[in-house]
Picture 1 (cartoon, rainbow, N blue to C red):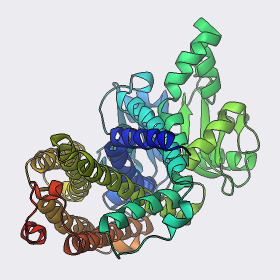
Picture 2: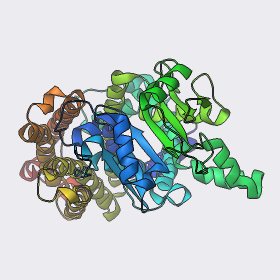
Picture 3: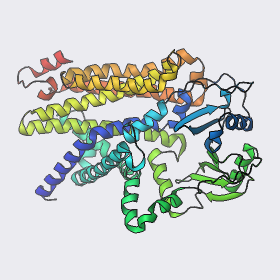
Picture 4: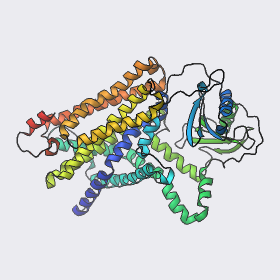
Length: 521
């Protein structure tokens, strides 16, 4: 490749990396935890007061009798303590069978929203408001995913000719900055397929509504809304006939769905018009062993299948979207694939941080220390330490809040705690010495995550290790603490063996750099 063309690709790679790097760090760190979204829902819940399974059909009768509006549309969640979600006065509400006493009175236990907050932080940076085309955060992350893809493509072109040499060049001897550059390149090359999947699927999901509206309007015109509804709805919305019908047992509906799709593992059931002759139930789940494993069976009240969507029976829309979701969330291969996604997501965080730091140091070497480079370095450190610490504190609030007098406000407190940790740490990073700030952050963050399983044990006792999902999340938090401690060891090694860059010590000095590093650390 000609030198001038290579220089253009290097500038392109650096530019799009700088623009998208910090937002991608937030998305990847939250996304690594969000891989275990289902398990996190169980971890954040209060322990059930009863170990005996509840009757699902009695629960649904009580629910629709106590909340008639829920009969129009609700989502049923099977399990030993069945649950339901429905919209009441414009807001989603949740109830479980254990919410009703033996006398039929209703009382809702406070619930944490940690899993949903981590999910929102991943796909829309937890920016509130809007949905679909009006979802600013989701559209923003879709655009960032496009820039992310450009950075991957340009980086591959830059490093392809010297790929073999760089893969074998990772060692602690000689120039330490060269070591971290090679580490950055090594992570990028080894995890390239994973990053390509994240870039393509992230852009597809983030910009799906935008592209559907912009391109679909040119083809379908005024009929666009009807076409989108026809292609995305599993079944047309129900119009009540006003004719009551006796509902079958929920177990019979689940059995009928499993008969229509052999091997179906039910996740939830959408119920429209409960108790009405024109109502229907959409049983959703997955069929293991398939990349596009999502399946949906629509049944009428009399157990007759109305529509079947499975890995073997799909239209073009579902055949293309199901693999996109599976590849992005890593839910197609069980626990081993989830753990792989978890580790690759954390490596992606290291990739973005090291890329920003290397760019700041390299630019300072070429043009001299500047306020722009210093600001970007400090902002990178502030966002990274702030996000990692803020998420840990949200875990604390989730577990402590449900056992406090403010349990009813725990969902608000989780988000507020994240913001109150993130903003001061970012502001502090813009004024503190980067070397000292990073050293203190590396020292504190492992303990923040170590405290999460400790709180789980202290507040909930044996549940912390007897329930599989709760144990898994606690082990993940322990592994996060260990990985952060490992990063701290490598950071201290660099400080000890390499001369600190002027950007890190907060001043330009050519005298006694090692002493300055020791003083700052």
